[in-house]
Image 1: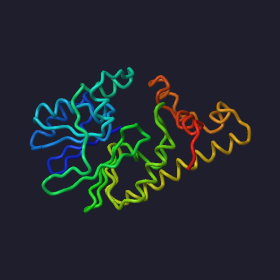
Image 2: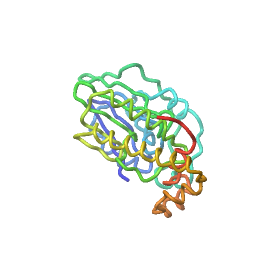
Image 3: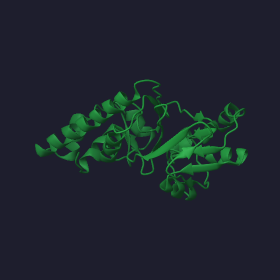
Length: 244
């Protein structure tokens, strides 16, 4: 899966994975950044925050939970270290109501679900949403074991109240018609929850629901991640309760 780093008027939005550090530094060599924004703490977003912050002597901003995560010694799984590498501890300053550059204003919007600290950045005047991992795709195939489907649904509903067209996802950018794509993902997740709740009311156990709904096309992913990433995790999250 490709990882995108965005640079807007000297503001770096996410920093990519540390396993690609030399390439990231080279690609940003001719920029003159003045701050870094993190959508969340995951290694493919924060992996070069320390290196870029030190190289350019600039501050790193994020959600207060991101600041806590990036200050702590966090354990990561072998697959995460192999694919992305580890993020160094680094000081992250909690952002205010807006982040301003010379020409643009970004509004941070807390959108938990993919992670507790997940935040998107909206440039309202131009209708640009820097979405981190809020989108990924209309019909996502996998969930991490710590993702919360009901929180994601709430976050996607929240974004219906904002105007934007460009959806700058960290893995699957959509320069046009971004808002309808988020709406499609919302509908997909609500459909999943509805199916799980219906089967539960019919008396099926959690394992029976998984066996019925899981297409089981992610065996290699489950094996490689030791079960940390799978479609079944999406279903389990829907089984943990909630309402929409």
